[in-house]
Amino acid sequence: METIEKIKQQIAEHPILLYMKGSPKLPSCGFSSQASQVLMACGQPFAYVDILQNPDIRAELPKYADWPTFPQLWIEGELVGGCDIIMEMYQQGELQQIISDVAARHPAPSE
Image (cartoon, rainbow, N blue to C red; front, side, top):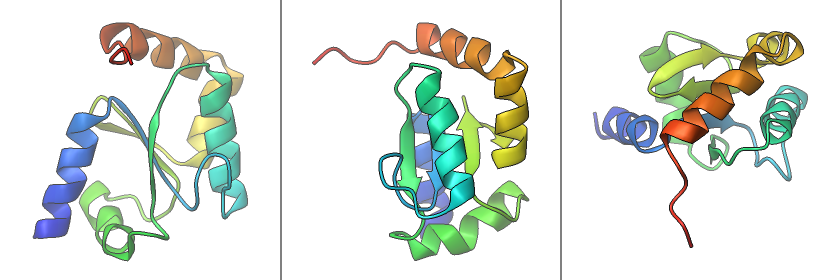
């Protein structure tokens, strides 16, 4: 049950969270690469979890989310979807607006 608690905490702590294979700068799969690139193109900071470094999360998140694949984009505690949905929302201009609105509601702590 500890892993599910960790997942819930990550989702609660980060208004924009991408579960992916690898990192945005060094993705380990094409879908994660596409998803992180469009998020970076939205111009707002986002958190990510490399599921390859976290096999417990990789195993439990699909059951918790009822979504079998990665990447998974979570915004304000809600699962948005995977790569295809992220790309479609970006192409329609919808993702940029959502990301911008969320960033305005959750300003990054100043350094």
